[in-house]
Image 1 (cartoon, one colour):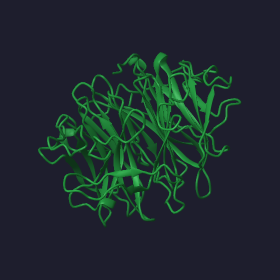
Image 2 (cartoon, one colour; image 1 turned 120 degrees about the vertical axis):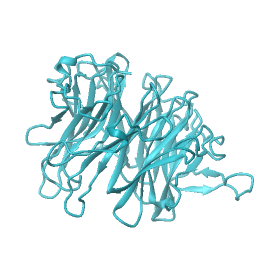
Image 3 (cartoon, one colour; image 1 turned 30 degrees about the vertical axis):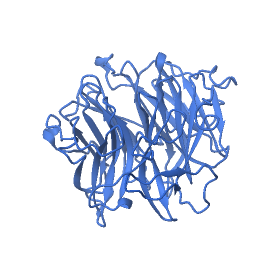
Image 4 (cartoon, helix red, strand yellow; image 1 turned 60 degrees about the vertical axis):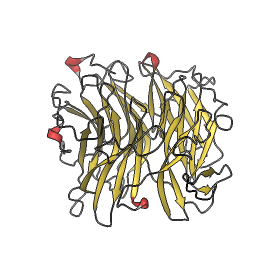
Length: 454
């Protein structure tokens, strides 16, 4: 857990990082514009992922030193970027997961499935995982057996090429893959049924990348809530509690504008955990207007759960967003210590904002980052990155930048948040895209990283 190390300057840019606390990417001769996921490393270094749009199927990894310089020795080519190519057109890098062995698992989507690429600590592929370090998880499953009375239908994951009829994947948020202490990997994925219908599943892989049949008898769990069609439930991410139970979160929607945000818990075997929320196995925050759950974090000290996202309460009249946050106890009840047990809606600036990432600090404070501005597909020319710190009761921590929050964007440009991470000493790193306002839509042409004192 991180602790505050610079309380007198908390929430201000760290002058020891890059140029006054800001690192811009591409930098110098290093290419690749889209840095969608970041991971803190030992020695206060940072691992960043780089999507390389000029090279079909390619992405890169780079290490950033504590002072914001690029570790040129990483990757072995002298550039500081370790490039890796897949035989597919890639959509986006979803996230990067740190592993117990010191390596990393990178999750990348194509139009037809997921690529899980596992690296060792030295940047080499872990060839014991999948096929030479790569595991392909298609969005289409085939039944692998007939239904049985003594257990669920099992599935065989196709390892052949993707179907040309598959629909493109949607954008993802949140932690979408985590490693258990025994090395097994929990992740979420889509399953397409036919051409235009899909639903979400949670999968568990063995350390070598094969499906773990001890998880729900098949390695796969369909995520659905009572009274909600399977196709109406979205999984935004997964997380682990200290006792090995699996948290799943997302939204469900009906035929109106209303939606609910849910948190579900599965036990170690993949079954619905009925000890969560007094026997239900899940809890919901219902009757929200255009609500999205974007991030979830578990507090190490007691297993408390914070969920962050956004809601558009006046979506039929405009597109100003409100940040949405609530806290649950370990066993799935709204925590009355946070905002008197109610969801917290916040609009810290006039144009509204969302919460895209969140994290607990050791003292029970919550750090959250998101983007100021209206709906992402509407060019308002006002997008800024917003980072805030809330006390454990939900009030703004006014010692953070003197106001509880801080804004960032480059002059004449827009800034949208993609990821956030806490360094081991508590300093806060936020990353995102740099965009130039356009007549209809903004144009993304680079990335940025800022580091704030804690």
